[in-house]
Structures are given as structure tokens and as C-alpha cells.
Length: 437
Image 1 (cartoon, one colour):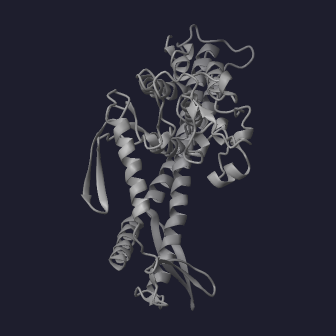
Image 2 (tube, helix red, strand yellow):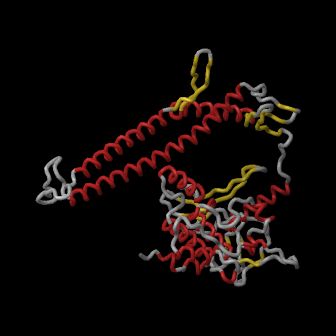
Image 3 (cartoon, one colour):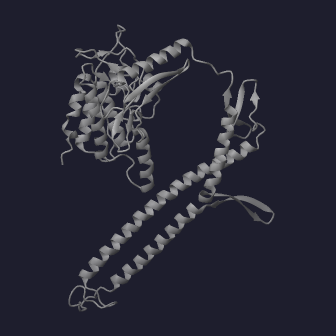
């Protein structure tokens, strides 16, 4: 099965390289006397962009020439003006008012050409990056084809060599499959996972709200497999949406982050779902809010999913609850209190303000394209460096420009001390989310 998968992967790569060649280009051969050199020949996509850039340059040159010619038609000192603006004969003396209008036309056209050129330059940069990756993959595939290990051998009676990752001067690096490493889960581990999933089902099955993805069923397939049936939500998740927006914006020369109003709309929808979770007799702390757990339906409306780490607060318990699963969750989105280790070994107390912190991080990430704390660090580094325990104040980049009201809302979501942070109901009722003009 592993060999078949590797063989299929090679075929897919081969087909993709072939399909991309007409667009990106290919390696050709240039002969100079007895010398033969490999040269890159650009594909049609490059030719099209360069042709458009040449056409823009010609248009700019034509406009500049017309601009100079128009300026030469201004009256010389002491020369009579046309009777009225707009009355000048073709090629004759131009009234200064007419020249001002014509100059604005030229400026507007040149500005439009500049914007168009910037878009084309961005497209060319993306093509260049794609070409670099294409050439690298061509070389890797060629090296793989010529390798003595290309036939999926098993080394040391254990390691099945699958596909070449790269080749150096004296070595080749292969992706391998450890045949001995295949092992089934222990019964204890299976039981723990099943317990976790069944618990998630019992939490989520009773939730009926437009901002919550419905969990419909759970059943056993065999002794080693079970299935959960979720509502079909076909619009992707917030993490993928932000990355797609960034890629499209980079191509269009636009801002790489979501517009503030759109991001605010998403936050309002998330909080609507959280309000529902906190107005039930036994309120629920989601505890794992992050972009990947915010789904979109086909209309672009948000739904919260993945209640695997959720906490159910006992009825009448108003002072929060003990965190008994410390260490679980996605660290970039958890508040400082989740990382506190008490000397008396008692569990820290948490409340729905955990989710408010997560909302603040998600909002910040949508607006600025990065997480406010521990952005480029791993979870292990965040824990080791006590990043969240020291996340006392949020800093905002100079760009993109964001309203003071948005920053204030984020600060209140990311207040270090729980007592200073908004709870879910306060955050949802914050004036910033009123959408009044």
C-alpha cells in the first residue's frame, strides 16, 4: 500500500510538471560551437506579462509625448488667449484653463497605468516564485529517476524508501516508511480516545444554534474504528480563508489582512455563538477557539466547531471552575491563567473569559496577519519561554491602519488579569460591535 501510494505520488508530480511547462517554461539546450548549455525558456504566462508591460510602456511614452506637446501649446508671454476655454483650434494656442483640465486627464491616465503596472509586476513576481519551485521540482524528479534507489527498495529489512526529497553532493535524502514502526493503539489509548470523542458528542449533541456546527451522530464501525457525523459546512474554515485572502491580495497589490469591518463581523458571529453557550443552565467553555475551528457555510456565515476540549460548568457555579486538563489546547490562543502552576499543586481557576481571550487573538490575527503573542514560536517554545505568562500588554503594528475602537476592544479581550478582562456577555454587548454608521 505504501509503495502504491509513493508510485501514485510520483505520477501526480510528473503530470503536474508536464501540465505546468507550457505556462511556466522548460529547460532547453543552447549550442555555441562545441559548447552545449542548458537554458531556461520562459513559458506563455511570462510572455503574456512581458507583452502587457511593453504595451504599458508604449502607452506611457505616448501619453508623456502628448503631455509635452499640450504644454507647448500654452500661450507665450504677451500672446493673445483664445476667446473662451474650449475654443482653441486643434493644434492652436491652448487656454490655460483647458491645459489644467488636460493635465489632470494625463495625470489620471498615468496613475491608472502605474496601478496596472504594479499588478503586472506582482503577477510577474508570483510567476518567478512559481518558476523557482517548478525548476527545483524538475531537478528533484530527474535525480529521483536516475537514482539507484528509485525502485522502492526496503533497507535493513525495515525502511521502505518511497520518494526522493533531495540530493546533495555525496548523498540522497529519501522519504521512508518504517515497517517496524507500524503498531496498533493500546486498549488504554483507544479507550481514552473513545471517551474523549463520546464526551464531545454528549456536549455538542444538545447544541442548536446558527453559530454552532451540529454534531448529529456517533457510532462504532468495528473494534478499532468509530465515526462521528457532523453537519456539512462547505465554506472552509477561517484559517484557510485568511490564507486565501492573503494570497489573492498579494497578487492584486492589496492589503494582506482582512478589512476591519469584515473581521468585526466574524468576531460578532463568534461571540453570538459563545453567548448561546453561556446562557444555558450549564454553561460551556469552548477552550479551543482558533481560526481552524471557525467554519463558514456557503453564505459566509460562521459556525463554531470542535468541542473536544470543552468544559461544562456546573449549574450555579459562578466563580469559574478548576482547570483539570492543563497542557491541552492551542497555546497561542489560551490566556495566561491556563499556564499558571501553583505551589500548592492546586488547579488554576478558569471561566468563559478563556474564550474571550481567544476571540481577541483571532481578531488581532485577522487584522494584522500575525498572532499577538508567540507568533513564530512553537508550542514547546511558548511553554519553555513562559510567553503567555508574560503576555501582559498587547502591542499593535503601525500598519495596517486600524481604528482606535478596534484596538480598545482587543485590549479588553486580552487583559492579562481575569478580573480586568471582559466576559462573554460583556464582549458581545460592547459598543464596538453595534455596527451603527
